[in-house]
Length: 166
Image (spheres, rainbow, N blue to C red):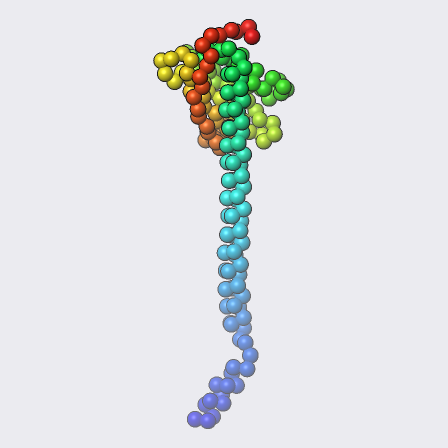
Protein backbone atom coordinates (compact mmCIF):
# COMPACT_ATOMS: atom_id res chain seq x y z
CA UNK A 1 0.00 0.00 0.00
CA UNK A 2 2.81 2.35 0.89
CA UNK A 3 4.43 1.76 -2.43
CA UNK A 4 1.34 2.71 -4.51
CA UNK A 5 0.85 6.06 -2.68
CA UNK A 6 4.43 6.96 -3.32
CA UNK A 7 4.05 6.25 -7.04
CA UNK A 8 0.99 8.51 -7.31
CA UNK A 9 2.80 11.36 -5.55
CA UNK A 10 5.77 11.09 -7.88
CA UNK A 11 3.50 11.73 -10.90
CA UNK A 12 2.09 15.00 -9.45
CA UNK A 13 5.31 16.98 -9.18
CA UNK A 14 4.53 19.46 -12.05
CA UNK A 15 1.83 20.67 -14.40
CA UNK A 16 1.39 18.47 -17.42
CA UNK A 17 1.30 19.77 -20.99
CA UNK A 18 -2.39 18.82 -21.32
CA UNK A 19 -3.29 20.99 -18.32
CA UNK A 20 -1.34 23.96 -19.72
CA UNK A 21 -3.01 23.69 -23.14
CA UNK A 22 -6.45 23.31 -21.54
CA UNK A 23 -5.98 26.41 -19.40
CA UNK A 24 -4.76 28.42 -22.43
CA UNK A 25 -7.83 27.34 -24.47
CA UNK A 26 -10.18 28.31 -21.64
CA UNK A 27 -8.40 31.67 -21.30
CA UNK A 28 -8.74 32.34 -25.06
CA UNK A 29 -12.45 31.48 -25.01
CA UNK A 30 -12.99 33.95 -22.17
CA UNK A 31 -10.94 36.68 -23.89
CA UNK A 32 -12.73 36.21 -27.23
CA UNK A 33 -16.09 36.50 -25.46
CA UNK A 34 -15.03 39.73 -23.76
CA UNK A 35 -13.66 41.25 -27.01
CA UNK A 36 -16.84 40.29 -28.88
CA UNK A 37 -18.92 41.96 -26.18
CA UNK A 38 -16.80 45.14 -26.33
CA UNK A 39 -16.95 45.27 -30.14
CA UNK A 40 -20.73 44.84 -30.17
CA UNK A 41 -21.06 47.50 -27.49
CA UNK A 42 -19.03 49.97 -29.57
CA UNK A 43 -21.19 49.30 -32.66
CA UNK A 44 -24.39 49.80 -30.66
CA UNK A 45 -23.07 53.05 -29.20
CA UNK A 46 -22.14 54.37 -32.66
CA UNK A 47 -25.54 53.42 -34.08
CA UNK A 48 -27.31 55.12 -31.15
CA UNK A 49 -25.23 58.24 -31.69
CA UNK A 50 -26.16 58.30 -35.41
CA UNK A 51 -29.87 57.94 -34.59
CA UNK A 52 -29.63 60.68 -31.95
CA UNK A 53 -27.92 63.05 -34.42
CA UNK A 54 -30.49 62.29 -37.13
CA UNK A 55 -33.33 62.95 -34.68
CA UNK A 56 -31.72 66.26 -33.74
CA UNK A 57 -31.48 67.21 -37.42
CA UNK A 58 -35.15 66.31 -37.98
CA UNK A 59 -36.18 68.43 -34.98
CA UNK A 60 -34.08 71.36 -36.23
CA UNK A 61 -35.67 71.15 -39.67
CA UNK A 62 -39.18 71.08 -38.15
CA UNK A 63 -38.31 74.23 -36.18
CA UNK A 64 -36.89 75.94 -39.28
CA UNK A 65 -40.07 75.06 -41.17
CA UNK A 66 -42.23 76.55 -38.42
CA UNK A 67 -40.14 79.73 -38.54
CA UNK A 68 -40.54 79.89 -42.33
CA UNK A 69 -44.30 79.46 -42.01
CA UNK A 70 -44.53 82.25 -39.43
CA UNK A 71 -42.29 84.58 -41.49
CA UNK A 72 -44.26 84.29 -44.73
CA UNK A 73 -47.95 84.74 -45.39
CA UNK A 74 -48.44 81.62 -47.51
CA UNK A 75 -51.23 79.10 -47.59
CA UNK A 76 -50.37 75.44 -48.10
CA UNK A 77 -50.76 75.26 -51.89
CA UNK A 78 -48.51 78.32 -52.28
CA UNK A 79 -45.82 77.42 -49.75
CA UNK A 80 -42.97 76.57 -52.14
CA UNK A 81 -41.14 79.85 -51.60
CA UNK A 82 -41.41 79.58 -47.82
CA UNK A 83 -39.76 76.14 -47.85
CA UNK A 84 -37.19 77.05 -50.49
CA UNK A 85 -36.15 80.07 -48.39
CA UNK A 86 -35.74 78.17 -45.11
CA UNK A 87 -31.96 78.08 -45.53
CA UNK A 88 -31.49 81.47 -47.14
CA UNK A 89 -28.04 81.90 -45.53
CA UNK A 90 -26.73 78.56 -46.86
CA UNK A 91 -24.92 77.94 -50.13
CA UNK A 92 -27.10 76.93 -53.08
CA UNK A 93 -25.99 73.26 -52.86
CA UNK A 94 -27.30 72.92 -49.29
CA UNK A 95 -30.78 74.39 -49.68
CA UNK A 96 -34.04 72.54 -50.19
CA UNK A 97 -34.94 71.70 -53.77
CA UNK A 98 -38.41 70.70 -54.93
CA UNK A 99 -38.36 67.10 -56.18
CA UNK A 100 -42.07 66.37 -56.64
CA UNK A 101 -45.38 68.15 -56.66
CA UNK A 102 -48.77 66.48 -57.02
CA UNK A 103 -52.06 68.07 -56.05
CA UNK A 104 -51.27 70.03 -52.88
CA UNK A 105 -48.50 67.69 -51.77
CA UNK A 106 -44.91 68.88 -52.07
CA UNK A 107 -41.67 66.95 -51.54
CA UNK A 108 -38.32 68.66 -51.03
CA UNK A 109 -34.82 67.30 -50.47
CA UNK A 110 -31.65 68.72 -49.04
CA UNK A 111 -28.12 67.62 -48.20
CA UNK A 112 -27.07 68.42 -44.61
CA UNK A 113 -23.38 69.26 -44.94
CA UNK A 114 -22.31 69.06 -41.27
CA UNK A 115 -23.43 65.44 -40.82
CA UNK A 116 -23.46 64.23 -44.44
CA UNK A 117 -27.16 63.27 -44.22
CA UNK A 118 -29.96 63.67 -46.75
CA UNK A 119 -33.21 65.22 -45.62
CA UNK A 120 -36.61 64.74 -47.25
CA UNK A 121 -39.37 67.19 -46.31
CA UNK A 122 -42.93 66.27 -47.34
CA UNK A 123 -45.91 68.59 -46.96
CA UNK A 124 -49.42 67.32 -47.60
CA UNK A 125 -52.91 68.58 -46.76
CA UNK A 126 -54.08 66.97 -43.55
CA UNK A 127 -57.75 67.83 -43.57
CA UNK A 128 -60.28 69.56 -45.74
CA UNK A 129 -59.06 72.87 -44.32
CA UNK A 130 -56.59 74.49 -46.71
CA UNK A 131 -54.56 76.08 -43.91
CA UNK A 132 -53.63 72.84 -42.09
CA UNK A 133 -50.94 70.58 -43.51
CA UNK A 134 -49.00 67.58 -42.35
CA UNK A 135 -45.23 67.91 -42.45
CA UNK A 136 -42.95 64.87 -42.47
CA UNK A 137 -39.16 65.09 -42.16
CA UNK A 138 -37.06 62.01 -42.95
CA UNK A 139 -33.31 61.93 -42.38
CA UNK A 140 -31.27 59.39 -44.35
CA UNK A 141 -27.63 58.46 -43.88
CA UNK A 142 -27.18 58.02 -47.64
CA UNK A 143 -29.35 59.23 -50.49
CA UNK A 144 -29.86 55.65 -51.72
CA UNK A 145 -31.11 54.36 -48.35
CA UNK A 146 -34.69 53.13 -48.22
CA UNK A 147 -35.04 53.27 -44.44
CA UNK A 148 -34.58 56.63 -42.70
CA UNK A 149 -32.32 57.00 -39.66
CA UNK A 150 -34.90 59.35 -38.11
CA UNK A 151 -38.38 60.53 -38.97
CA UNK A 152 -40.48 63.27 -37.42
CA UNK A 153 -44.02 64.35 -38.24
CA UNK A 154 -46.04 67.36 -37.19
CA UNK A 155 -48.94 69.57 -38.24
CA UNK A 156 -48.54 73.07 -39.65
CA UNK A 157 -51.11 75.81 -39.53
CA UNK A 158 -50.57 78.20 -42.42
CA UNK A 159 -51.55 81.84 -42.56
CA UNK A 160 -54.99 82.52 -44.00
CA UNK A 161 -53.81 84.77 -46.81
CA UNK A 162 -51.03 84.22 -49.32
CA UNK A 163 -48.61 86.42 -51.13
CA UNK A 164 -46.25 84.75 -53.59
CA UNK A 165 -44.12 87.87 -54.10
CA UNK A 166 -43.02 88.30 -50.51
